[in-house]
Amino acid sequence: MSNVSLIIEERAANIGNFLVGRLLPFIQKRSVGPFVFIDHMGPAKMNERQNMDVLPHPHIGLSTLTFLFEGAIMHRDSIGTELEIQPGAVNWMTAGKGVVHSERTPERLRHSEKMLHGLQIWVALPKHLEQSEPSFAHVAKEDIPEWEEQGLRIKLIAGEVMGRKSPVPVHSKLYFIELKNEAATSVKLGSHLFGESGLYILDGGVKDGGEEYGPKQLLIAKDAALCEFELMPHSTVYIFGGEPFPEARHIDWNFVSSDIDLIQKAKADWDAQLFPKVPGETEFVPYPKRKI
Image (cartoon, rainbow, N blue to C red; front, side, top):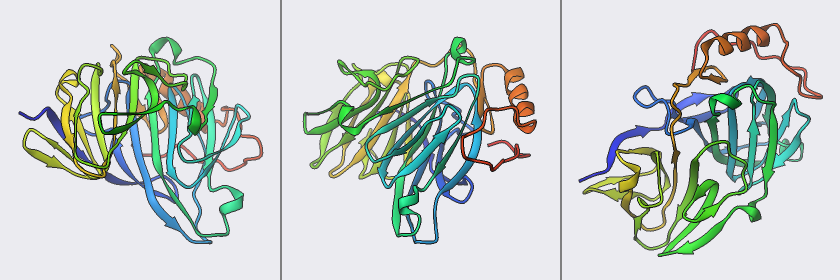
C-alpha cells in the first residue's frame, strides 16, 4: 500500500522577471511541518542580456532557506549582509519582526551566459520568535554534513535527523535531506523521521506501493514513520518536514504569521515605507493586490 497521501505538481509562478515552479503552498496542503513555501528555480539558461533581479521586498515571521544546484545569487539585506551564494551552500535569513532583501545575478555574471537552478524555501517561525530581531547565517558547502549509506549519498542540509545535525541555525524541530544514488536503491527512513513529511523529486524517480513518480512532483506522506520507497537509478530527491506548529500560519504576499493583525501591520508599514532599507538599493515594490 502506498504511503503517499497527496501528489503536488509544480505550477508556474512569476517572481518578478523570473519564472519558477511553485510547490508550496498548495490549496490542499498549505504547509508540511514548519515548511510553508517552496519554489523550484530553473534550471534557467540566461543570455548576456537576461538576469535575475528580485527587487527589495519585505518578510516577517519566517526564515528563508536558499539552496542552489547551479549558478549564483547576490543576496543583500537590511541587516547589512551582502553575500554571494554558490551551489551547495546555505543562506538562512530569519526575518522575525521584519527584514528587507534583494536577490540578483552577481555583477560578474550579468554580461555573460549563465545558468540558475535551485530551491527557495520559507520556514515559519515558532510563535514566540515571530517578532524576534532579524538575523542572517551563511553555511558553506563543505560544512554541510554529507555521508554514504546503503547505496545512498546523503546530505543533511538543515535540521537534525539520523544521528547528525546541520550547522544551519534552525528554530524548530525539522529536517531537510538530499538523497542521491546511482543504482536502484531501497530506502527506509521511517524510524528517523517525525512530524509531517514531503518528498520532492528533482531527477530520476520513486516507486512506492506499486506506483511510480517522477521529476517535478512533490509527494506528501500519509505517515512519516512509514517512509519506505524505492529510489530509481540516477535519482536526486529532497525529503523535508518536521513538527507542525499548534497554531495555523497565515501567508499574505511575503508575510507569514500566526496573527493576522501582525500581517495587516506589516502591509501598512511596507506601504508607508517604514521597513528598514537595503543599503545601496532604492527600488520599491508596492504591496500587490492579490495574494500568493
